[in-house]
Image 1 (tube, helix red, strand yellow):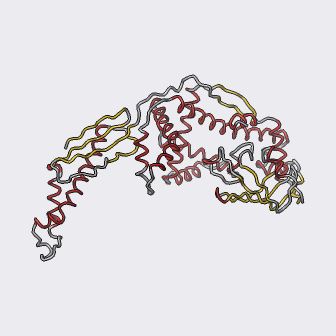
Image 2: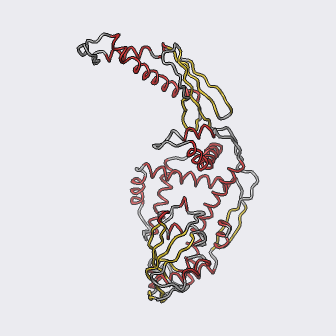
Image 3: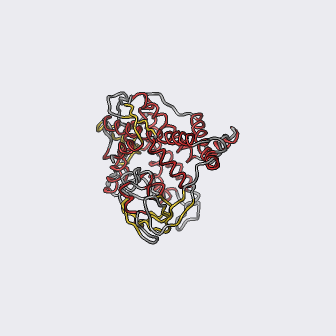
Length: 440
C-alpha cells in the first residue's frame, strides 16, 4: 500500500492511499473459506455450496468490508507514525464513480492540522489586575442586612425600599421559573423603583439587563446558568406572593455566636472586620476570574494563526447524534471558534512553560475545595482522614475528575499569567470593580 500526504496549505492536507490486490486478498480468501460451511444457496445443502457460488453471492460485500478494515487500520497507523496533530478527524472524500473492481483503489481523506504558532505572554498590554476592597458603605450595608435577616418579619400591605418580597420570577420561553425571597434593595438602583409601592398579587415585568448591579445575581435569584448570565436581556415577570418589613435584630453576643461560632466575634468592630475579610476573599476570586478572561481575550486578539475553517465546518456536519446542515455547521463553528482558539493557545502556553498537571495537584486542589466547602457549613476543623475519604470518593467519578482538572489548569494558568503578563495593579471598591467589569 502506498500512502502519502498532499499539502494544500499550512493547516489543510489530503492523505492519499493507493490499495492493491495484495493488501487485502489474503483476508478476503480467509473470510470466503469461513463463510463456506455456513453459506446457504437454493438447490444446495448447507455447507455444500461450491466456492465459486459463495464468492458470487458474498464476495463483493466481504471484499468491501475487508478493504475498509485495511484502509482504516493503515490510516490510523499512518497518522500515529507521522505524529500528525489533527483538529477533528479525517473526512473521506466521496467518489460517486468509485470502482471496487479496479486493480488499484485510491482513497482520499481530508485532514485539518493544528496550526504552528508562538505566543508572547510578556507582550505589552493594558490588562489590569484589580485589588477589590470592601469600603465602609459596603460593610455598613452588610451589617444592616444581617440585622434584617435575623430580625423579626413584619407583614406589610405596600412595599417600600426596605421590604423583602417573596415571589416567582418567570419566563416560559427562557425556562425561568423560580420562587425566591429578595430584598428590594438587592436590585439595581434603577430597578428598585419598579418594586416599591406594590401589593401582594401584583406582577412586575422587568428586563434582566440591569436588574442587578452584578449580573451573577441572576444565577441566584432566577437560576440562570453561568454560561448565559452575561448580557442576558429578556423580560421576566415577578409575581409578588408576600411583602415583609423587619424589626432589626440586636447586635449582641447571641447573634455573633450564631453567625460565626462561640466567642469568635465579640463586638461590632469584630463583626465589621470579619465582614471585610470574607468579602475581600470573595472579591479576590472574582477579580482573578476577570483577569483570566481579560488575558484570554488579549491572547486571542494578539495571537494570529489560521484554522482549517472550511474543513472544520464540514467535519461538524458529521459528528454528533444529529447531523448538521451546512448552515447549522456554519453557526456552530462561529459559536465555538473563540473557544477553540484559546484551547490551542492554552495548550501552547502550558507547553512553553512546561506546566504539567499531576494526580497530586488534583488531590491537593480537591482537598482545599472540600475544606472550604465544609467550613461554609460550619465544619471548620475536619480531620485529615475525613477529607481524604471525601477526596477519594470525588476522584472516583470521571466527570468530577474532568471538571476539577479544568479548574487546576485554570489556576496554574492564572498564576502563569500573573507572572508573565505583568498586569497593572489597581485598587478599587466593589462598585468600581463592577463598573469596570460590566461598563455600568
